[in-house]
Length: 477
View (cartoon, rainbow, N blue to C red):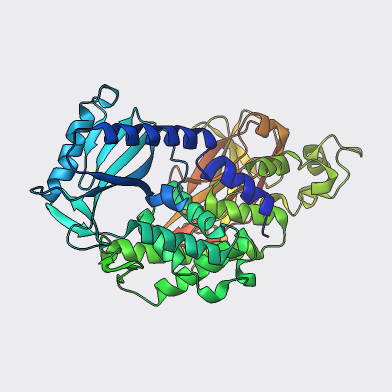
C-alpha cells in the first residue's frame, strides 16, 4: 500500500530538518557571511552561495545528539602569490580571531568549519573564480595544496532540473528518505553527493508526467528499482562522472568492498520496498514499511493496532461486547482456535530481514515453565495454555522429532506482546533476540494478554533464513 498520509507525517516528524533548526541555520549563515565580508582576509569576495544538501534541499535531521551541517561557498578572485592552501588557512585563522567564533573554528581539507556546541556546523569553502580563464571555478585543497576544478552552481541546477522532471519535489523527498535509511541502518556507505547523483541519473527527460512518478511512494519504488537495475549491471566499482564536470569521478572514494556491499543492500531494500508497496493488507503493509524505514514509520497506528486485539474488529469474535472480558478469556474458554489469524501480522511485529534460503528446515518450538530464569522446571506447557504472571518460560527450538540443530545454525527469537497492559508499560516489543544458551531462550511472564514467541533458524555461514517455527502463543492471565 502507498500509505501517503504516513509518509507525509514520517517526513515531517523524523526525516526533514525542522523549521526551528532551519531558522537557526539561516541566521548563522547570515552572520557568517557578514563576518567573512568584514575580515582582513586578502582575496576579493565576489559572492556567497549554498552548496551540498542545503542547496539541493536534501538536508535531513541528524541522528540524536549529532550536529547538522551546511556548506557555504565563498566565491573569491584569485590573489597573486597565494597557493591553494593559503585560502583555507588564512580564512580559518581570521575567523578564529573573531570573539564569537573563538575556539569554534576547525580546518579541513577544503574548508574552514565553525562548530556551534554540537548543534550545527557550517563549512565555509573558498571557491576561486576566473583564475586562468573566464567561467573557471576551483576549490582549494589545503592538504595537497592544489586547485581542483568545480562546478557547484551548475550541479545544483542539474539537481533542481531532475527534481522538476520527476515532479512534486518527490526526487528530493526520496533522496532524503534514502539518506535517512542509510543513517539509521548504518550498514552501507554512500556519500550524500554521490547518492544525490545516483538518484538523479535514474530520472530521464521522458519521465515528465509519467505514471511511474505519480506520487511519492510510486517515485520511491521507481527510483530504487532503477538504481538496483543500474547497480546489478555493474558488478565492479563504476565510474560516476559529475554530470556537470565529467572529469570528476564522484565514486572515486569507494573501494570494491564498500561498493559491493552498497549494491547488495540496494538490491535487498528494493525487494522490501516492492513488497511493502504491493501489500494490500494495511497492517501487514505498515509492518513491511517499518522493515524499510524503522519503527518510527506509522508508529502511532502500529501501537493502536496492538492495543485493539481484544476488540471485535481485530479478533473477529465476541470479546468486548459478548461474554468475554478480553481476548485472554476468549482463548481460555475456546482454546487456541480463538486466537485471531491476524495476530502475527500486527504492524509492530518486526518482519524478518534475512534473505530466505532455497532449502528450508522444519523448526519446532517447545516450552517449559520455571520458577525463575534459572530456577526449577515445573512442567512442560502447550501453546495458548493460560499461565500466571511472574513465572518464567524456557523456549527451545529443535528440528523434526526434537532433534537438536548442529552448530552450523543459530536461532533468533521474535518475542511479541500485545494488548493494552503491555502497551501501557511500553513493552509491546516484537523485535528479534538471540538465544541465551544453545537454541533456547527464557522470558518472564508479566503482562496480561495473548502474546507469542517464534523461532527463526539462521545458517551461520551465509546468514540465510532456513526455517521458522509456528507461533507459540503465551496467554498470561
